[in-house]
Image 1: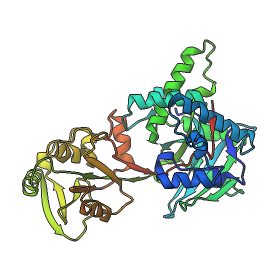
Image 2 (image 1 turned 90 degrees about the vertical axis):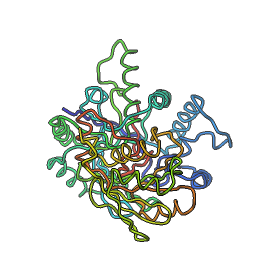
Image 3 (image 1 turned 180 degrees about the vertical axis):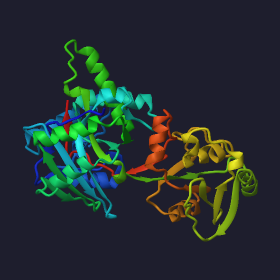
Image 4 (image 1 turned 180 degrees about the horizontal axis):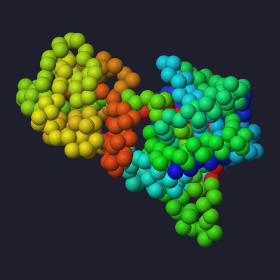
Length: 412
């Protein structure tokens, strides 16, 4: 039984929302960040990079306190205004490729996270969880929703479509050429119907935002233990989420780039690959795999197709079926000696929105020696891995939609 609740969102003034909303800080290049900070005084980047006005890099808890100060200044200046009634929010994104995403922004339950009603498919890093928990405790808000997905539901779908017939509270297009729409649901009956539909769901799944949700859960635990009058209704019991149906979720792969062959010659490397893969040299013709357990490889100016020899690979569970895991267990770890996919400097990742020609360019530049491409996983695989209590390797999925910070804010 998944629990969501409405909340009083803090939102930018309608006239400023397109200037305030920002992509995640790390997604900007240094020049892009500086340009926005220099020429857009309303960008949410000013809040998360509070030392910029002093031309000073600020870190740790000092930064967190200044983040809160900048946020309060935006509220004091009327850039941000809080809704008077607890509401749910219908949010629609149309990206530059015409892909459309429709869902609901709500507060999801940290207790559901604890009880595994909200399921996870990725490992998190403990020190990052703790760091972000401290950040949340200091600033007192969520500015970017965790992306959750749920089984398609006709009742929720019909309410969303009905709400979208009305005039949108927000409608704006970013320089990234994606268009965003927001509608408020403050009708109590509609909210109850939506909540009732989620209560029928045994599980929902984190699609993107594992560290943010884990940190929110840790904050909930701390606050609960510190509050002798804890009731379960306090705002720290929840975290802001964007819930979309499984059919709206788009999953791309992350392709792999490797700097060296672990001391092997090209010929020695190919011989080792031949033990586990049927190899075909495709020459200059780019090859894009179209089936699970088929891989593309670019090495020394040529493309190759690699088909897994399944007689030499054992499938024990849902994780073993995942192409990212197959590549790791057959090539990256045993042949190339890459054991730490998250931290090894010899491996880099390119999301699957880019064509194999990007892999070719990176290898041809001399920065890498070999690149691998694979098919994306699907929602069913993601759910099965989570249901079995397993975790995908790092950078297994590049999931859309990518959300903006500062459009709706949940305070606690």
